Length: 142
Length: 142
DNA sequence: TATTGTTATACTCTATAACTATA
DNA sequence: TATAGTTATAGAGTATAACAATA
Image 1 (cartoon, rainbow over the protein chains, first blue to last red):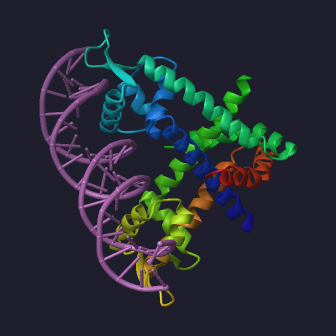
Image 2: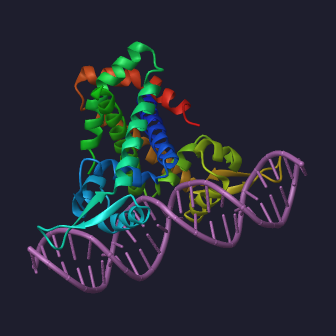
Image 3: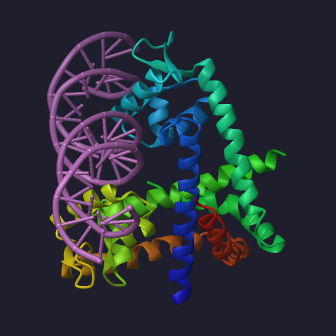
């Protein structure tokens, strides 16, 4: 079926566009894209390095570098973990919390506004199906 | 409304998952992710460098490096453009065409298969709304 | 002068492997 | 021994700025 190709093409196009929107907005807030992801994750409270490698699905050495750059930029700080002296927790600074809050608010606003330009019935279908679709593709990842 | 946050969260989750699926499959075919994008674009025929910068939305210097690596890997070759001696056209090699074909076939298969795990009515809604949604987010890009 | 493409430079993101410190 | 994290190294992807060749 040709429509399978069209479906896959649309899905990749949507993913690319959302990714690019996220990246552009990150930079507009003075954040590298992965720093924006990190800041959003930490907005609910500090997380250990080993927890972050699972949430971000990246290697621990990759994370060390990401946290180094975020720390140098004043976004996060490394906090000793009293329960396990091998471990450290990553917490947002005050500036990091403010930046994360502003970024999260605007990315939601932008993504919602773009969906509102769809025909009402299409928008309704899309918003209704999206949570289950996102969960299906997310849980299929290794 | 909390549901705007949930909508935006689901959209980012879907985009991230599709992106990761694409990247994983690229590497399984021996391609860096952007090389896979490049190969898919060129599967319809050669394209000038300046055309590729628009299609990929990247700077020309970034593209020079991407093409350098793809050429070194045997995926593409630079072909002089007889109509404009400043310009060059990028064409797939035989190996590049075979690789692009196999990759395109499998990415479609994988993305369709994952959608089939949704409840039938959700899958129907999602596939019905997706083309318009993808177009809306895509055209909103700068 | 304007366009096409490359090169130099610098930064982010990524992984593998070897290492230290603690459990 | 196993886990948490860092460092060294290498490569992909990104942009800006300066440049060469051609239109």
